Amino acid sequence: MACHSGTKIEPGDPRYEPLRRGFNSRWLGARPDYIRLPRSRDEVRQALQEAVGEPAAPERSRITVRSGGHCYEDFVCSPDVRVIIDMSLMDGVYADDAMDAVCMEAGATIGHLYKKLYQATGQALPGGSCPTVGLGGHVAGGGFGLLSRQYGLTVDYLHAVEVAVVDEAGGVELVTATRDDVDPDLKDLWWAHTGGGGGNFGIVTRMWFRDLPQAPRSVLLASGGWKWAEVDEDRFRRIVGNFGAFFDRHRGGPGDAYADLFAILLLTHASRPEIGLIAQIDADVPNARDLIVAFEREINRGVERELHPLTEAFGEHAAFAVSEASGEPAGLFAGERRELPALPWKVISRVMGAPKPNDKCGKYKSAYMRRPLPPEQVTALWRGLTEDRETPREAVVQIDSYGSAVNRVRPEETAMAQRDSIMKLQHQIYWPQDQDGTDHLRWIRTLYRDMYPGGVPVPGETTDGCYINYPDLDLSDPAWNTSGVPWSTLYYGGNYPRLQRTKRRWDPRDVFRHGQSIEP
Image (cartoon, rainbow, N blue to C red; front, side, top):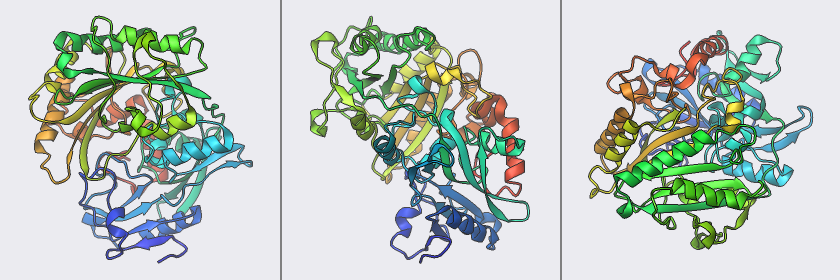
């Protein structure tokens, strides 16, 4: 039924089953009393007020919020959840003259947002590459994507945020906080949504962005892969070492010709056909085509094996294996031997990512790298990725380039503490929903533990913790984190005390909580 607090979906409604679960089919245990779908800010406020006022058993009392449903852990969908407030009907993107900014509602997905923003303004938001991710959670966790070396993180453009918050008496109000608020509590609330993570302070309803960059007129997108059958340990070390050394040299300082180039190295399990390499650069960058050619040459130095077209999906980046079969032009790393087409930005925003089928379970981990991977990390990678080659394993350690415009912002200016890294790793593994995941979890946990002393990428000279938008409950488990460094430091560095202060001020009842929520 529909009312002033939004549509209420209860068990028995045909919409209940698909709406009770998120993107990761590993989490199917949530059977909330109901799911609420508000359509406006006022309906969000009323829905939250009703949910807070309802009686609840302690073991089943959580109220959770979902914008896109891509949370990797059970922060939204778990047996202790009583109510899910789903923001997907709030997906507006429009110019707000009064705020002198572009307003985006929390339920807009990345793909929907890019299309509407580009068509209406010609602008781009430097955000993620999976089109079904919801904006609310993506922004709260910092936001990162293909344009980030050129333009920075998503939150670097966040001017204001509107949040439904619950006070100590249980009352709900809508609060708007801006970057330039003179009230320190409001300034903290804005700041907390620039990397503090979703599900911590309230329900984000709307966000306003200023000074967004114009979208590239076109980009050069190149992809290719080395066949695993042709890669021995020495070549593997050269690929990983060349990639790290390249972005160590090209951190994006003044005069760096590669400041705007973004690249991904996809280190798959050896049971897969190939290791992947993807690169993108604005076609208007001087000598862009020559830069792409030289980039391939640098990464392939000492490997001396031809890069072939990618033949399969990699993790969450299926559509990067762009081919004629997709109806779009293909760009293949092949030096001067092949013309590299310039793809209009509207094409890139369509093919940059693709959701996996909702019948897959997944586990994810992350690490920021301030330096290239040291030899012992590469050894652990080689051993893990070549373990039991005969057993098919849908696994990849994805290394994204970082730095450049990202690192021009001081760590304290936003809640994103990691502002001097050159690469970011995402360790991923997937398995069918009907398959026991024990061995897959063992594999990724063992690989991760073997890569980092103490089992986690402790902030230091080489590594700098983890990305909150790739949450990992193992960071809280002393069986897997033996470093003595808490999960909160791994995500937030020195910014955590300010996030705790903001939590105490804006969520004094700890309504918004999960397995790694900010501790009040």
